[in-house]
Image 1 (tube, rainbow, N blue to C red):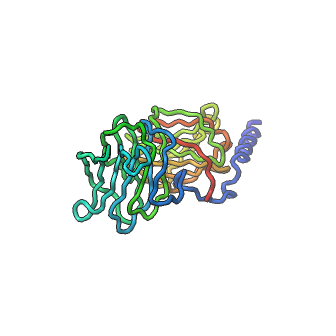
Image 2 (cartoon, helix red, strand yellow; image 1 turned 120 degrees about the vertical axis):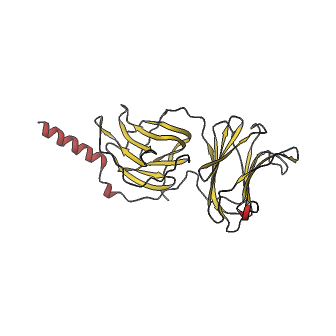
Image 3 (cartoon, rainbow, N blue to C red; image 1 turned 180 degrees about the horizontal axis):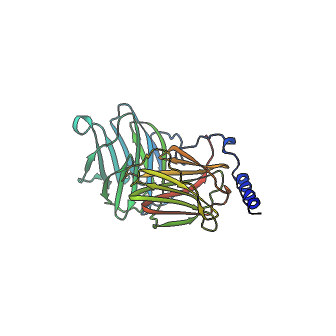
Length: 313
């Protein structure tokens, strides 16, 4: 009798999972909101910026760039105040290495306190610029690494436009969102097939866990970013018993750098992307429709968490 019950359970699980071989690999956008933007770029901000938000831009620099400016505006006028002016200047620095320059513009005058730091961006390559709003400060990340924290000299109130202009070949992402998240962070997250979960965060220690739970808080999927081991470990539970860990793959993460993890739920498996690149596939060990809750914990500072549709491209 026990043998029959076990066989029936195995058959039910197989029917839920289907055969991963029947699924075809689908290409997805690296980021939500990714598209080709007109240059120079200027957009109205629909809601006021608040502490905890990250403003994120990704594009490609020209082969011979001189300058790219990233501005927060108070108003649409040409001479509007700029609570943040962040400039990538390739015509400054030793042997043309360039500088990143922070300044503000108020009442028709530039501040005399212009701050300069070294420039990590390279001509002709992709740039990833993120500005996180903290209490009275702007925290700036260039290609995922923190490059500086700058004092907010003007209040955030009234910022209603953002512009990006200069020697860009392409701008393919502009996005803002996020808040100050608790740790651990838990939220309702019905990640159905055809949906994607995107997480951006800054690791602060040895381990970060991303947990997707079923209704009874059984793990449908755990992704454990283990900086101490140099491994991204995947696992899940069946009948509240852990299955076999999956550890294959290199470790594409670096301590102290922002990571982006995307989990896309397909009928037969989860597609897992790390920093925009397909990392692995994790076959469902239960129904693909049973995820109810998300939890993120460990040594981490969470920046953004979103769930959206995941159309292929």
